[in-house]
Image (tube, rainbow, N blue to C red; front, side, top):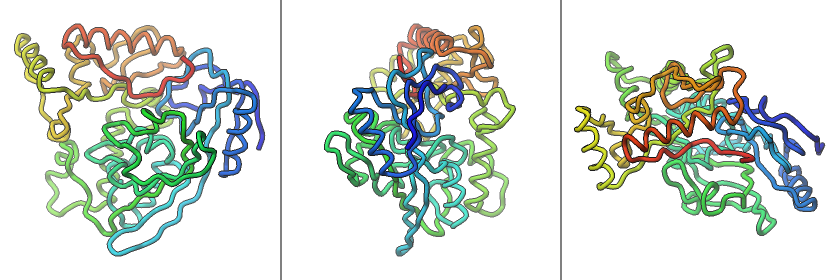
Length: 348
């Protein structure tokens, strides 16, 4: 395995900001991962695991240790009664895998179409969209346990999945390097149509949509909101949704409702959010005085979606952080809620 030095990280991320990695390696096998981890340990280097680069903000100073890009490929499948279990390398492109599962007539990931990044990143934040989360489909996660220096298979129940979280980004952050993920999907299952945008899209259809129809609809909707990586589209130069939808207690929600009533506003209710006691972060941003396209220097809000912060082309990581903090401070001032960022901040 080749260890490179001073490799720029911005081109390896969708936001395209940040400095260089002091050391960089790409791991195409489990042995490569072990070798790289040993290299970092021997040289007392901080280790950062890079997947598809879609959910990252890299500091302008870069990363002082080793950045290890996971490039483990391969997809195998095993059919059982009514289900198919896919074993997928952590370096496989996520949307490519979703396309493969839909083509095989397997339901359970179709609403996660168009999400950028790699398979290995999906368990970390329990990636979700349009009424589905990967935790609904994950059977197990194969990972290198850096603490015990051995490869382990973690069943779903041991991964601590919750809204945009898992043990991999909370209680055991930095302990595991994900190598492969197993997903159990329903063979010939009906597509999920829980989300309002999807219900609206298919409201005039006289026959139920197929899995492929739902996949295409999700990609169209994501593109309309600037949440699909499209070459040449300036709104694609982002890290996706920059803030999580806040999960509120009853007391917090009542306080939010009172603040809205004073302004003559009504908090929108979305079944997919209300089921988990969440409110729309996009609504909070837009009702704090920020419109789509609002800019702070070369950092701006997407022209298509209030939750996507975009690098106009020359933005630095510091520019993106300034915009982030301005939105957070104003939302907290107006609504008493501190928005929690969704991307991982590297090197800060």
